[in-house]
Image 1: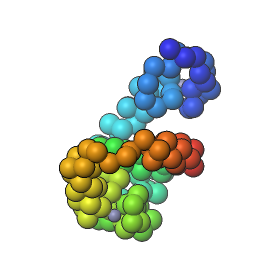
Image 2: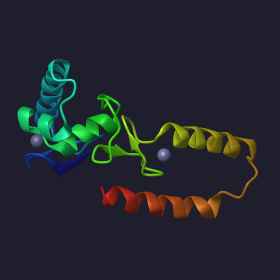
Image 3: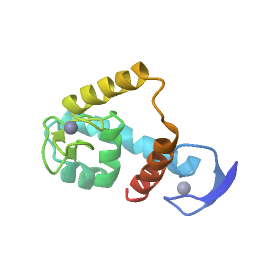
Image 4: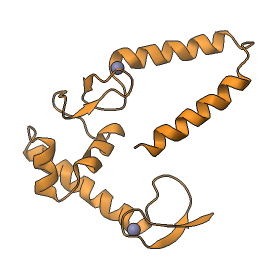
Length: 136
Ligand SMILES: [Zn+2]
Ligand SMILES: [Zn+2]
C-alpha cells in the first residue's frame, strides 16, 4: 500500500490499484457516468463537447469511458477517439478492428515461437511502455 495525492481533489489516501484517485472521487465519477448514460439515452447524437458541457464532465473523462468500452460513439470521427496503433477514428475501445486482429494474430505468433530470445527485448518494451503512460 502507498499513500498518494488524489489526482482529482488532491487529498491524501491509501492507494491500492487502478486510477490514482480517492474513493470519494471514484464514486463521484461513477455517478457522472450514470448521468451521462441517461443523457445519451435522451440525446443519442450529442457531440462529445455537448455531452461534456451539459453534464459538467471533461471531454477527457468521456474519452476515458469510451476507451474502457463503457461508452460507444454513434459514429467514428477524427475529433472523437482514434485507434492507438494506426490513428483511424473508432467508436470505442483502444484499437480499430484491423489492429485488434493484427494484435491477436501477433499474440498467436508469439505463442508459436516460445524459444525466441525475448529477454533483452522485454526490457526495451518496458521502457517504451513507461514513456507511453507518461505522455497520456
Ligand atoms: Zn479525490
Ligand atoms: Zn488501427
